[in-house]
Image (cartoon, rainbow, N blue to C red; front, side):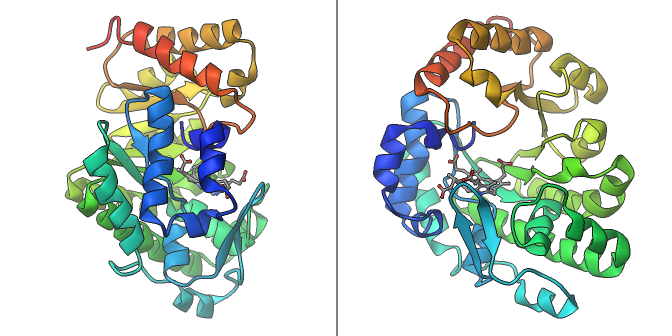
Length: 320
Ligand code: CP3
């Protein structure tokens, strides 16, 4: 339930006027913000308070996070020379992040999940300059200059690998690779232009010895591709969980897949929707109950408290 904090009054109090990119430089604040949803909801894992653009920001690639908009690049990538501005983060760049992780691992009773942006999703931000509906510049480069595109995504794979190595070395127990915008690609294009760089990241995570969760939205047509090299595949609400499990087999776990918008409905509806997700999994091991995407800021914290409680009571009944 990433961004669970946005729905919490204690989160807004602790954040105050601190921007996200300032906040992630302050280990005590990161520790507090990461712990808040665990404290309030009793979820079974913590998601590091950070963002997929933090490794870019930490290496001096100018980026802001604009509230209500998302990441905005000072100078988007336009041509080959711009790639020279990208480099993998080192230990000094990520010192505040690793300090926060070390503190969290000491204080948390649950595992800490680190994360990175997948090459395709980061490439979209770099090329578009910010959030995009149709990813037109991204597709224009991908289809129009394959060599430059592949150079870009391979560099972004190196950025993700370095970021995840530092997180795992500091104590993250699992990592999630977020390919939030890969769902805009056709299956053929996903396989050709996005999957190879992501697979290299997943293979590097396997070497690190921690489980990898591979997350996408609108990626129902490429679930099998996303499962390669992943321990857990994120399923959004567009794919019924039983269908996803039938397609993927027992070799990979699934995460999902309640529609975050369902959490805005009256509690009885939320409960019925959550029970439908549990029923679709039918007690099989290897299901991480979650929302299909992040928590919407309008969500009532009381709903999430009841949701976690319901899943804990009913989801474990026939589990392992
Ligand atoms: O609160 C948490 O759980 C921390 C974790 C977290 C953030 N970003 C903090 C954040 C995580 C896991 C992310 C990942 C992230 N960031 C993704 C991948 C996951 C997904 O949801 O698809 C993506 C695509 C981004 C890029 C990004 N950053 C977006 C789309 C936004 C939202 C813009 C908005 O305000 O609606 C951000 C900003 C952001 N990242 C916020 C937070 C808490 C909110 C803005 C802020 O607090 O300044």
